[in-house]
Amino acid sequence: MSEESCLFYQSRNPRPFLDRGEGIYLFDESGKRYIDGSSGAMVSNIGHSNPRVLDKIKAQMDRATFGYRLHFRTHPSEDLAAKTVAMTPDGLDRVFFVSGGSEAVESAVKLARQYAVTQGEAGRYKVISRFPSYHGCTFGALDLTGYEPLREPFAPMLEGMPKIAAPTTYLDRDNLSEDARGLNYADLLRDKILAEGPDTVLAFLMEPVGGASTGALVAPDSYYARIREICDEFDVLLIYDEVMTGAGRTGKFLAAEHWGITPDIVALSKGFGAGYAPLGAIVASAHLVEPILDAGGFAHGFTYAGNPLACAAGLAVLEELEDQNLIANAAAMGEVLIGELRALMDRYPFIGDVRGKGLLTAFEFVADRATMEPLDPALNAYDRLVELAYERGLIIYSRRTRGGKVGDHFLVAPPLIITRAQISEMMTILRDALDAFATEAGLGLAEEICA
Image 1 (cartoon, rainbow, N blue to C red):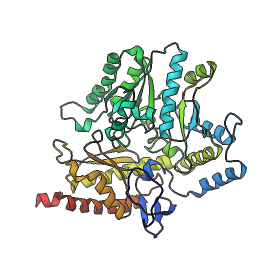
Image 2 (cartoon, one colour; image 1 turned 180 degrees about the vertical axis):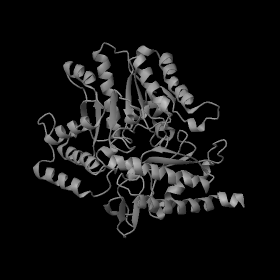
Image 3 (cartoon, rainbow, N blue to C red; image 1 turned 90 degrees about the vertical axis):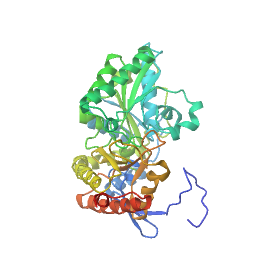
Image 4 (cartoon, rainbow, N blue to C red; image 1 turned 135 degrees about the vertical axis):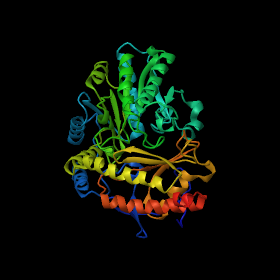
């Protein structure tokens, strides 16, 4: 960028100006094309510039762009709420709209707290979450997040909610089966509830498939049912953070459906509005919501909650998911993508793990597959590979894996419209970037090692 910018975000890393988006592609003002291999920040589930969605947004703009929820009901918000309920498991039948993921997580926790108060259980206030994890950057969501670089500067200002270990079974070196490992990780929740005092624990918050902090981490199947069982045992509410996984990303509308789990509250955003408008929601059961309304109402809200323009966009996005069979495509193309990523391990010995579900996939770098020791942090691999891929026209997403200080994982999560041919195109660029990184970092390739 030649001119000085008045904007600031996380860093000084300059980027070109965006010109337009078409499907899975983005173009800068020079005409360079990029494959959006991470859907932005796992947001653009139906791709860019979908004409049907744009037409429906424009139609709503011609009618009204804002109607405050205390003054008017709107058809877009009512219709989107009904559509959301129809697409989620039975028992999730009340919707509250927000503008983003952090707002959704905070709304879920505040709903849980107010429900406990209506039940005469005001002593319940602790929300257990996992480490590592990511649930948002506002203060409440940050206190539930297990990612040290984001949390440390603000730690003195936070309550310090309890954590249990995330189910990182791929790092375990024992003789247990995956199911046994899953049960052991789940039972950490039971131990923590007992240690904290069951009468003080309000909820357990988890990502069904890991997001930015754990890189598409999937627990063993045994984990999910056992967590539900433990929450029921202690009357602890189970909150699923599906901000990243929801709206079809994993090959089901909610990732919870893969394991037949119905959480008490679900947080949605990102792909729910798919980048066409700031939009999120919590979805909960009437048995939680109605006592709160009977007691005087939900003491919470945001100015743009239920905004008709945002809800019109969200409704159009959900209709596209159904009409174009994109959730099934996410499942099918996810199998293709994860197969391609696993094949990389044959050439790159520093790829230690590949994981994910649907089109939420990731690979992790290691120094030694046998021990899963992470690469030297001085290599700055999590940032460097992203830059090398970006230079070549591929956007991927990365974070530090082991709580934020060490480790390197890369999320590959393209829009749900992606085709087999486009996956092949994306992998060609990714392999080129990996070759360049290996050369730059002095890391050998499998063929070289064998030779």
